[in-house]
Image (cartoon, rainbow, N blue to C red; front, side, top):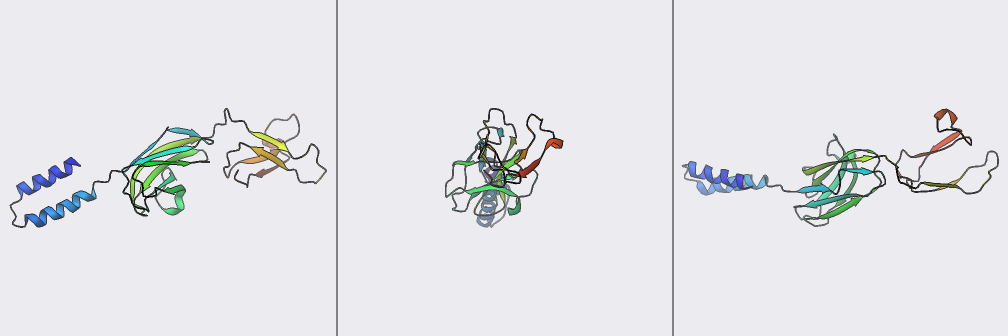
Length: 189
């Protein structure tokens, strides 16, 4: 920012125009357009799929339509690429949290006043590690009849669209050839 003002002052000193007021006004406007100072940070660079992602923002513009979004890395800042998003709610600084991101490489991006012009970005990664996660699966009853729907209660599943369940013969490994029947987790929980 100081560099911008230094350039304006040097330009004015070196210019011998009679319209100094016009030049100062124009340069001030141009200089102000480059003072975007939005800052984004995450509380850590790598998360697991069960972690809450904590995004800290500061130096936002205080518009009621400033927003922050998560995108997959190397995607353009258009609405169809938004993975998750939230308004900053007229705050110039604060924290937003996001949950249930599938494994992948991401960027959090800041935007002023409902625009798609990116003001800041920060990369982070989500890994699919389930170490230490206590996943619980329980059938709704101990025995099912032939051709009866098998219903399973579950807890601590990521909730990603690519989570799935499978039925295997007892004492078999989880090779695909052993799958009797499988289904995606459509509940998102």
